Length: 209
Image 1 (spheres, helix red, strand yellow):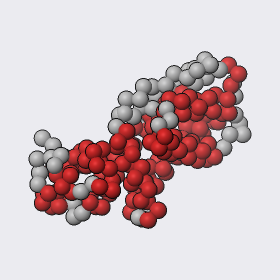
Image 2 (cartoon, helix red, strand yellow; image 1 turned 90 degrees about the vertical axis):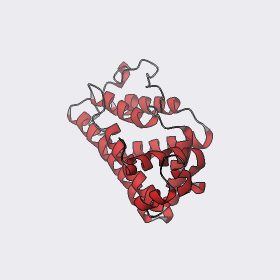
Image 3 (cartoon, one colour; image 1 turned 45 degrees about the horizontal axis):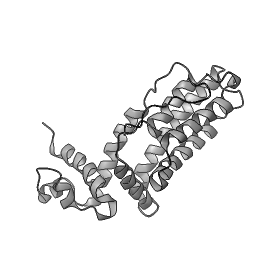
Image 4 (tube, helix red, strand yellow; image 1 turned 135 degrees about the horizontal axis):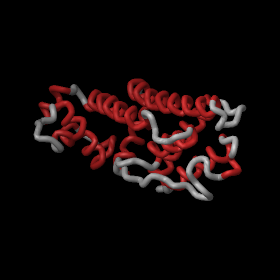
């Protein structure tokens, strides 16, 4: 049986999808559960506190998503890591829009900003470790700087999500672009065209979220 705090966090995601961040109320969240609004307030004093707990919940899921990506080589693992964020998403577009609304509050809300910084730091570190391994085993170019690549890919992924929500740019096209970047910029044997599992194109996991 699901405990009340977990039920509330799941309901928060459903309510965000339907109402967005700005119009979301505690009653909207209660309406997605068998609990009363008073019960929601028993666990979370206000909408802000609840959304902070929700971001913490999302962070736990995010850590699982980026942990130990599939692939035999650093290049394959790096592509899988990017795909896990860019294309292998089950969140509804409405939910991605709501998250973008929350991100828009972060310049004015330190607590939101600190939570979002954790996501960024974790992703940057995951990319950096893979690129570092690729340089160490000789599959990536000797002059590749893991910190620079990690910063670039984190910025790229954030931009991809914003562009997709804002203007509907296809996620698979963005993923293909980063696969090409890995092939042509990072790999020592880029002329083979197959190091990331592609040959002229890129096989990308379906956008299930």
